[in-house]
Image (tube, rainbow, N blue to C red; front, side, top):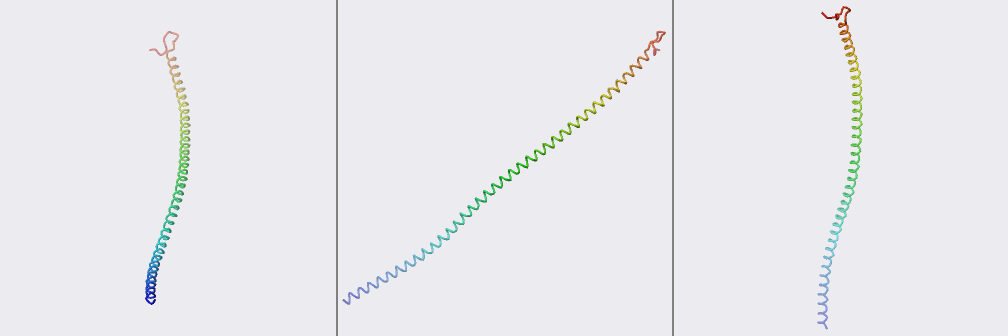
Length: 146
């Protein structure tokens, strides 16, 4: 019975040592699991930050696209206004040139009429002089003949 008791105690001691070893391993594994859990949480935080940065970038990109479109519309509007203003200036200048041409044409026509009248008067004077010098005298001679 003493031998049996020694054997049981020895076996209990061995079992307790095995249990202690397994508990040590389990503690080590729990430590590793805890470390890996911390690593995973850290990586998940990084991933969440990256996803938020991507969303922020997409929103910023959309805002820039909207601003670009607004600037394009504004530029188009300003270009249309500038073209309209240039057309108005060109039309006004063309109208002024046409009016100036019309006034010059009228002045030239008046001056031409005056010159024609003057020339007609001169021709009438020449005709009168020629008639006077060619008058037939009662003696049959032509006045102005030698």
